[in-house]
Amino acid sequence: MEVTERMKRLPGEGAIEVLAQAMALEAEGADIIHLEVGEPDFKTPPNVLEAGIRALKAGDTRYGPAPGIPELREAIAQDVSVRLGIEVKPEQVVVTPGGKAIAFFTFLALLEPGDEVIYTNPGFPVYEAMTGFIGAKGIPLRLLEERGFRFEVEDFLSKVSPKTRLIVINSPHNPTGSVLTKSDLEVVAEVAVERGLWILSDEVYNRIIYEGESLSIASLPGMQRRTIILDSFSKSYAMTGWRLGFGIMPPELASHIIRLVINSNSCTPPFIQRAGIEALKGPQEAVARMVAAFRERREVIVEGLNSIEGLRTVKPQGAFYVFPNIEGVGMGSGEFADYLLREAGVAILPGTAFGEYGEGFIRISYANSLDNIRKALDRISEAVARL
Image (cartoon, rainbow, N blue to C red):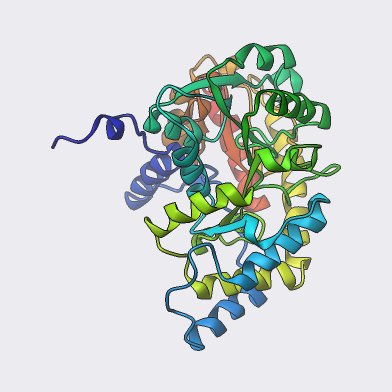
């Protein structure tokens, strides 16, 4: 079957592919511990679940406004205004079925073939995939282990060119768990303001942070009109399958993104949006408990990995991933990930699933129980000892 050239440039996603392999092994009787998928193992909070059920029973199952129902847009604007300390109005909010849609629509609205996009590498693979799909040119910005998986300022400045149109940042970061500092963001902001560039700021993990707070680049002087904030309910509220995301952007850009919504998915299901309102306005204890559990798991997995000869890992500051260095085991990232899956029954992702600079690393999600994490650490240790 012949497809377009742009489709040939569009890869799959590593986490989904490894999950499929792991499930195939499970179907054959293998015992697999899943540390590959970035999905909280907690249930959606009961109050949020009940809000969705009430909306279904009330018949909130018809088309809704393309940018989202007014009540949710208002709730998001209020929440973000308080958390980030900036004034956000409902007309700046566009609700979508998952956060990826905001990324896709942003790329479609802002990029022409040949434009350059700077994105961190290793990084969430969708950004490199969308860059190639659009026909733009990707400029990977290397994150360094020795800097806690942050970039070098001089390296960033060297990547900016007259063709740069968009800079993608992600903090807290997938796959490394790093958090950009205020000085990091100020460097990016200064360049964006000076050159009139757009920033796509992926803040999906902004509520899952262990020390300090996650700062948004949109809160820096002059940056609100240059920034698209990408966020979702998936990680913070254990709502991955609900598919509820949103973007915050200047109103003049929102009007174009809304037209893309109209011509693609029409709207986000209203009953799901009602659940989102409850998530934001209802009790937040479930989020706090989840973050506390992730913090405890982080300590266990970091200590455990650093005790295995041949592995070392930086302690993440946010999200729920570690990105251990595996250079000491004598295998490449893909080979080692496959070895752990087939020989140890532990599903993780090769660092190369997140870009070329992920070679020599693996990503492990600790969105699993402490018992399973400890069992996985034992299996990994035994598997490494056999090499």
